Image (cartoon, rainbow, N blue to C red):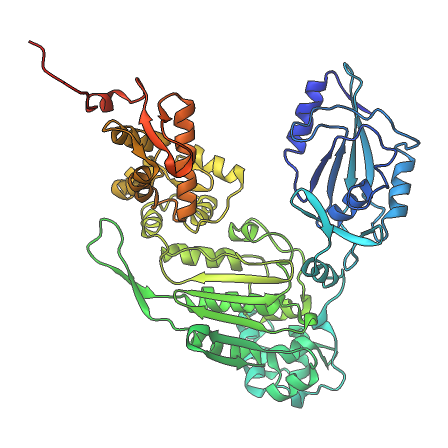
Length: 580
């Protein structure tokens, strides 16, 4: 048992390690374990173990107060001990891996309060964890039965050592391959290894030897990866059935769509060329000439992104890759969640992939120059968009069942484009996070804190804005003032000036404040709620009061001393005469 001198020290440790309840942490102020380990379904420990395991695993804190994590302690352990509770939980949670499930005891010496930490492992691949004959997951503060989308994601998970693309296709022969695609593969392979002593021999190699060297064949036997990259359309479609091998390009607004098939070594270029790519103009600050460039970087961004979809598609799910084009945006969608790590780790160039969903396919694509197998592909796409002063590509909209890659072809906020033009010294991590700010995407608290320390943003989440320091540095002072979320004091002062002219009904208050709030609170209902809160706050401060009735009968008046000094001098008073 780990001991702390005081309950306050234990509380501080708990708050540092389990700051809030979420899909990974659960707090339970159980004083007795008697009916809480395995008791009422959806409320007992085994239910929470199932819920945590069916996500990414986590920890249940028992014996600490909800919200504050004050260690109140377990008083009644019934017949449970650190040694037997693990076996009893395993007996009630079919599918739960035994490795990783353990219980840790903590104690505060001054109060003798004992807290248990139940560490829960992640579920095994393709196996949901049950409790009370049901699989559970978190939904806010409560538990619900595992939703269908999460169940499908678990059942479709990748198994270690499994590679759909490496399977040999028994009936496939060289006649099922496209001659032009084979010639292109030979050319790209020789180009990659041009400095090797044997490179001059590549043109004389037999097709069987070439395919073995690239990894598309195993001792002359053709794999699924080979049919994807080099197969003739008819042969690949038939031999890989029932798995669709297809890329669909569509423009929904125009009701236009087209399907593309193997050999993908050649046809992915056709897909990228279908994307409308006119020249656009950007206007750098303090520059007289505009920057003219294509809307999309075809090679570094569109093709790299499409090839990543091809390499990481979960073909076993029986779906197709979709390329959706809309005004200033291209979305590429492949089945299967993002594989091995998080996108930001690759965007910053700090991670090398340790595994691929389709290892043989990915290796072969790297051999013929279609992807970068060292992990720089996403990093290069981010840098390419940064050099073009456009929003960075991202993976918003992805889920455990599919990966969505978004490529932006127009500005979202011209101020951010100007910042990228002016601040070429910003580290890539800061650029990534500022890009999320302009898209109104959520940032982690640590990222927000670092941007604040760097003087790049201000405001309160989720209403973050560029800082005054950055606005001045890039000549965006007017835009900064227009975009900055005003302080509540700004609105209080405006309201005091109105009430200094006499009591006013709520309709007049709304007429004054709602238009001022529209810039940063677009929804009318939210603006009215803000005004309601402002009136309540000013009433508590003793600055205003309702001298009418409730709701529509309200009549707001300024109390003596309620207005700031600059408002008081304009306040009207009866029989105001100048003294002599």
